Amino acid sequence: MTSFSDFPLHKSILQAIHDMGFEEPSPIQAACIPKVLEGGDLIGQAQTGTGKTAAFGIPLVQKVSPVNRVQAIILTPTRELAIQVAGELLRIAKYNKIRTLPIYGGQSIGHQIRALRQGVQVVVGTPGRVLDHLRRKTLKLDHVHTLVLDEADEMLDMGFIDDIETIINHLPQERQTLLFSATMPPEIKRLATRYMKNPQTIAVSSEEVTAPLIEQVYYKVFERNKVESLCRILDSEDVDLGIIFCRTKRGVDELTEVLQSRGYLADGLHGDLSQAQRDKVMSAFREGSIEFLIATDVAARGIDVGNVSHVINYDIPQDSESYVHRIGRTGRAGRKGIAMTLVTPREVRQMMFIQKQTKAQIVPRNVPSLEEVAERKQEQLREQLISLLESDEIADMYYKVTSSLLDQYPAEKIAAAALHLAFYSETGEEKEPEGYNFGETGAAKGMVRFFLNVGRNVNMKPQDLVREISESVGIPGKAVGRIDIFENFTFVEVPEDVAPFVYEALRQTRINGKRINLEPAKPRGAKRS
Ligand code: ADP
Ligand code: MG
Image (cartoon, rainbow, N blue to C red):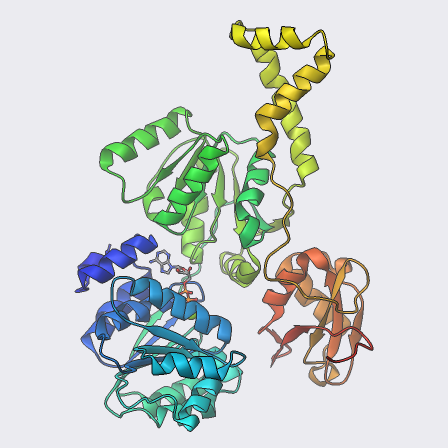
């Protein structure tokens, strides 16, 4: 087992990684970090979600100095990725004086020019916009010692190969080139042979793994109300003991705090706790004095507690092996167990990938509504009240309050008000999913209409599209609304509540071999503003 401190990294970087809550390097990180630090070109291949950004980001931050020159450039296929990668680099470089700038189309170029003038050490950009800056001479790459081609296969799919070659020709010959990709189509290999010097290839292929035969479900949730969704799920389940998995130590701490403040018997377990603290949490869990154990993968390794009824992936696991390890904590010794995974729109594809690799049946479920939760809560509340009524544990103080009110109000109303006072704050209000406002798309009521850049030209039939949507977001085919297929494009309507999931899952997938792009449609007859 490797740890980040096994690598020759500056203390400041190790501290930053610690703050990010990463417990141990993922397999691609463990293999790549030392190689990149040594120098030399490298090709890293691993599935989405396996931590490729930090695999190059950590050694890259170490190699960059605070002098006022662009020393590293990272090319990414989309603006979202550019922003995401720049954000991760910023966190890694938290204690280093290194400036990272994402540059992408769609943002004012003037703003980017000003930012570049102020001096940055690392540029993360989409090929088109980077070229634009090179032509305007607002970006100089003469001092770049590291080039990263991130998500190279996606850049290829988006037709950026020529742009990438032009950019490479602006770079010094003497440099380290790193290429990361989930897949290795021949064009990428060709690019590597042409522009890399004796590259080493590190491929972390996840082997096929078999998931245990327990019930497996997933819930579509939004990042913004993930906690609320989790609570509703927990409230509508009969849990003996549950293990809730988070990606990072920080995630564990944050979720532990929220769940405790909402009154759940929960405690967290991760590598920063002392052995004594861990033992205490574990024995509380075994005895059942805490109901939920919130843990990272590392902390939960080797935990063998008999009556874990629920494993909940609050954060989706990094790969199928991790999925199988996690869910194997339940259903032990022939007992019944269920594994639940929370999936945000961006993670649907990863869920589908895990499902395919493990050959497991992972069934979509809806997050229970407030009403459904309320019904269960009423039942539980009644039971709690009865046991209290049968005991002598109610303090005199409470009797004094109720009896002084009895002249004015009916007993039933007083009791209900008391319950309201005790429990009201628990239920959160419904929030709008953030960041997915598709606007007016000309769809039927309650639906969103999307525009697809393919049609009959790729032999797409309505049933192909329905199958793709229904399989990738787990909705019945009949929930898909009106479909209009034209020669070169298509309109399709889907229910509002799953629209963000359809949008993220379908964007950049393929139908009959052709990459599809998806945009919210413009309302019919709308005036262009
Ligand atoms: P990829 O580029 O392979 O698709 P990312 O680099 O985007 O994957 O990482 C996916 C997620 O995993 C990110 O949220 C990232 O912060 C997190 N992550 C990466 N490495 C680790 C680690 N060692 N421990 C915990 N979380 C990690
Ligand atoms: Mg990536």
